[in-house]
Image 1 (cartoon, rainbow, N blue to C red):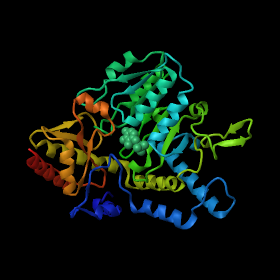
Image 2 (image 1 turned 180 degrees about the horizontal axis):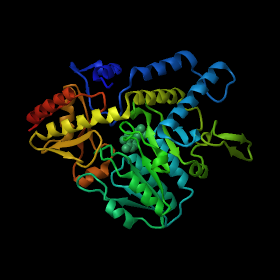
Image 3 (image 1 turned 120 degrees about the vertical axis):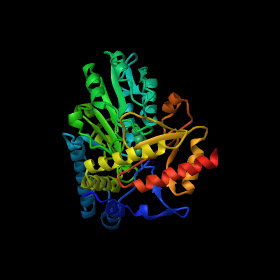
Image 4 (image 1 turned 45 degrees about the vertical axis):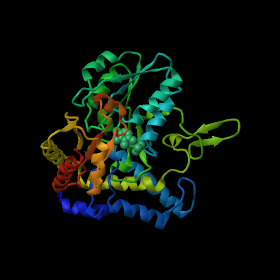
Length: 403
Ligand SMILES: *Cc1c(COP(=O)(O)O)cnc(C)c1O
């Protein structure tokens, strides 16, 4: 049973006030809020078994290691990876992408081509540009359309035997677009290209099955799916992760070290140098359990209702334009004619409403629409229609004050 009052009670922060008004948290695309069970797991770790993992023979270290590795298995099951060692625990999406891009920096050659979608977050653009600079590979851009969808019709023409890698997000953080990654993966594979899907914005809404997708690399961050900051995953097919060189050298990632030669540990440890975010990894596992206990069908249903309702109500405001009108997740990116998004965001904050304003780390999308940025309201399953009513009234008020 999906009971919104019960769900909201799981999130202590939703009780707080901002500038004397009840918090309306619509910045879920930037980070989600944290349920009490996840907070409790963090407190439990530091109160009861804080210790370094994989090293000690003592009890605390063994408990921490067991919990950390249990979390990896939970994550593996959630994403349906074939093996738990295909789940690399990282500091988040950004680091996960950098592990892959830096690995391919020693594999790609001059003249190779890689394709990036026009809808990417900077963290799925910049690392690849750095890789191309090092290797001489050419970065090509799969264009987008006015409605915020990708020009899949142009994709086949761009693919060739030279194409080695394709990068695309599963859901766009700036517009909410749900990208046709199944088709992208399928077509890229026909040309022998590998595909990395940035799932940071999809995983709060969708439970991806990496085997069914047949995706080569899939990355996500815990903090967008009810978990803590500073932890995320890199899923990779084991044969590809084996091929990539390590990202960082240090403890944990070695088998033997002498001054003449070091041999690396196997997966996943090869990519996990140093002491990881142990507590974060464990709490990530708890967050995944929490989201599954709510159920992704229930999450989708609630969020789709909020999206439809919010879209309808906001569009009643004259001069308001929504960017991204194709099939999408619960994100509404909008502007009001003649008003800077930052000014709207500031007034909304005074009224207790948290939204994101600006380019959302996706400047190429803003350039496409020839705008400086947007106001982005992104909804989670713990949001309500009443909160959307508060937003709509506040936007009307902001419009009046600013025009
Ligand atoms: C948030 C986000 C990122 C970056 O995630 P970090 O947790 O900051 O590393 C990358 N891509 C998309 C689509 C995102 O929404």
